[in-house]
Image (cartoon, rainbow, N blue to C red; front, side, top):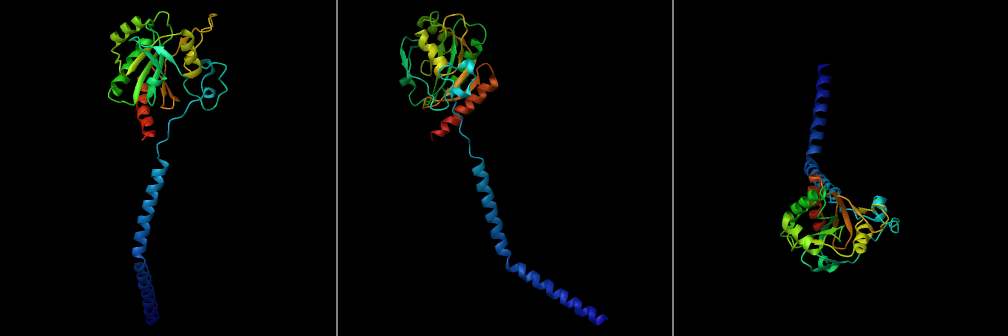
Length: 241
């Protein structure tokens, strides 16, 4: 009985050593395979975490109250139209002044006592962030060009700390500003008082890319939205690198 048990024990021990020898032979393979798996996991993680580009907004995606009825159906190829307006220094500003630039646009008026002062303060914060950045500019359109003459805009610019090299406050033909607001920037409402060119500006800031496409809408009265906008400017810049 003892002999049989001893023989079984020896066989078990022998088989165990054979298994250990088997695994020893594959030790290098197992280590190499583990390293390969880790590398593959790292690559997959990197691919899945590639920074997503900002959206490109089309008229069909925006609140219809902000979009002229003639373009509400457009789903692609929307761009900011050519323009010619006058800034706070009496200089003509056109799309060429913003060629190959990223810029933030909004609509305001100098006598506004509600959201405009907050919006202007936030634009000034953005100005501080981009003051040394040659890729980025600002553009503010008045919605009351009859009141906001060049002299009025200049006075407002001086009071609000506008840097002329970075930020244009523009006035001009009311019809052109209205059409830019409703057909290009998709940013203002009509007030329905019988004048088809009257506007109620919103708090929206629009981020425009180098192809004159709208890449974001932001609440110009909300500090968190301004932080998001500043971050999105950096995201957009990376598209061009």
